[in-house]
Each structure stands twice: as structure tokens, then as C-alpha cells.
Length: 492
Image (cartoon, rainbow, N blue to C red; front, side, top):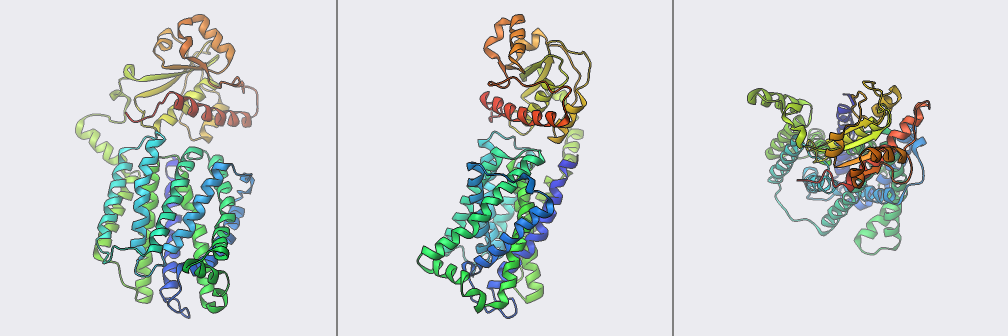
């Protein structure tokens, strides 16, 4: 499906802009840019780099036509925007420390991120598939191998503090992004992106400006120089440093879209970190060819090969491995024949005709379960109190599910006593439907609810497609809430 491939286009764009970003960040502070003397430090160039980012992000949003998604950010999105501001500033500074190579800086940053990703998946009960976990371990192995080339494992105090700021930024952003926006719905993800960067565009220059104005010590002095004397004292450095910010803004949109993909964080982090490590290697190689900068150590080339293997495993190639295993064992690991349906937990959704609301809710629930540790131990089904037997789901309902990238295949069928008895929970679309079900099966009152505890789910039949789209999004939020209440998806 297209949604399973687009993330690789994002990864390509990410690498295309991250490579010159990392190379320029190092070159401008290592005396590799003509006319720029060696001795500039990261905090001194940070204000000019921030200017490049702050100018470029609104331009990208304008060209993409995404201003329509702008609105006042919620407190949680504002907190995520703070995290992004911390990430942007600390990433640029990380590549400028003397004695710390681009590759070593990436190892320190990405190692923490790779450890963080599966922990967040565990907290949010998101299913981590075997190839995502395998790629994660391969990526961590690659970082450890590359770390072997370092001659000095000590970190300057400022570098350690910068790393702490970077990881804190991701510790804020990753859980919030997972909670609010990791879904296969472009409206949700783009709205999140625009609202988050609106906050970041304010905080990104404001925080260092406050430190420069009111802080003390070498860091505050360097920032003050960056806001004042840098522009006239080092005119040859201004354009390259501003371009550092331009490249960051450009690669950030692709990196954010990778993270906002509906897959588990373990998958997205492995792809993101693998792409950035490859960018770092390309940046060092480019500097070596163009300026005589030292080439990477042999161990780092070995690490790059491991990263390539991890990225290959994340690609659709892993299906070939599964197919080969199926052939060797004579089993269909991904087929329904291996699943004992009678042993599965059942969540049941009920409406009247079983052609719109309840099958939409069941499809959304099964899609959500596919990203949780629950599958294949739990399944969702739908049924009707007065179904049009064999009828397909309505076309507007299918279109609404397509917009959410939710798979669907359905024929209307009646509610059965066996399903009512087996279900862990039964969710009706309206209060009157719950009353009708309990009139037939009063013994299941304790596990029968309205999907929306506050209001009936409206019947969209006869309304415009927009009503179906809004209904699908509303039910997606409700289904997630209900699965959370049932504690479905927690690791066994």
C-alpha cells in the first residue's frame, strides 16, 4: 500500500538535507570554510543558525499549503514544541565541539533515542514487530562498533549538558507525539506538525536570547557574541551558518513525518537514527574529499554496513524473510490458520443495520490492535440488531476508513447469542440500541455500554462525505479510549 512506502520517501528527503546540515555545522567551526578562522564555537553560531530555521519553516508550510491546519496549540502540543526547540538547538551545537567528531556526536544522541523508543512503545501498549526490534538491536550494535574508533571517551562539561538537553527534548516530545498524533491520518499529523512548530518558532530564538541577556559564564558570553558581534566579526561565516539553519528546517519536516507515521516508535526511531547515521558518514566523507578532513575509521564503515542491513530489514524485504520461514516450516505465520479464534478475546460493536457505524468501529479497533501488543490475542467484530444480511459497508463509510488508512472488508450479519456471551465488552452506538440488546440478553448488562458515554453516535446515512469523515475520527478517539479502559494491548 502507498502508506507503507511513503515513509521511505521521507527518509530519502531526510538524508538529502541532513548530510549538508551536519557537514556545514562541523566545517564552519573547524576552520574548513574559506575566510572563516578556526575558533568559532557552537553557541556563537547558534543565533544565525536559528535565523535560518525560523525563516525557512514558515516558507515550507506556505509551499505545502499547510497553514489551514494552524490553530492555537493545546498545552500538550506546546510542551512538545518546547521539546523540539531543545532538540534543534542542541543538535546544531553537538556537531561543533572540538575533539568530538560528527559520528561520535551522532552515536551519543541516537543511542539514547534508540533506547527511549521501545520504552515509549511499552508505556503506550504499542505492538513492536519482530523486524523493528531486530533493526533496533542492529542499530545499537552499529553504534557500539563505531564508538570503538573514539580515542577519548570523556566529554567536556558543556557537551554533556548539551546531550542532556537533547535527550530531555525527545523525552518530552516522543510520548506526546505518540499520544496525540501517531495515526494514519494526514489531517491529524499535519495539524500536529504545524501547531508544534508554531510554538518552536517562538521558543527557539527566545530561550537563547534570554540566556544571552540575563545569563553569566562562558556560555552566555558566547550567545551574546552570536547575537551581536558575530555578524560583523565573521562576515564570511554568516551565509554558511544561516544555511545550517535552512538545512535543519528542511530535514526536520521529513524527520517529523517519519516519527508521525502510525507504526511503532521502535520502527520509526530505527529508520530515523539509521538515516541520520548514514548522513553523518556522508558528511564526513564529503568533508574528507573536499577539504582534507580525516576520513572515518574502518570500524565506522563497518557500522555503516550494519546500518544498511538494519534499514533493509525495515524495508518490505522483511516479508521475504517471513515467506521463506513459512516455506521452511510449512506454516503461514501471518495467516489466520494459526490463530485459534475461540481463544481470542472479543470486543463487539453493535448497531442496527451493520453497514455503517458498527463495522467502522470494528475496523478501527482492529487497526488499532495491530499496533499494540494485543494482536493476535484480541479481535473486534461487529453485528446488527436488524441487519441487511450480506450487505457491504456503505461507500462513504469505506471512504472515511480509507482516509484513516484503516483496512476494511465486511458483510452485514446479525448479532448472535454466542457472540454476546463470549464478548469481553459490547459497545452499542446509541442508548436505544443498548436497551434493545439488553431486552434480549439482560444477563450481559455489566459488560454492555454505549461507545460514547456522553452522547449517541449519530447516524450519518444521507449526509455528506464530510460527516462520515468526522464520524470516523470521532470513533477512532472513542475506540482508543475504550481499549485503554479494557487495558487491551498491555504486554503479556
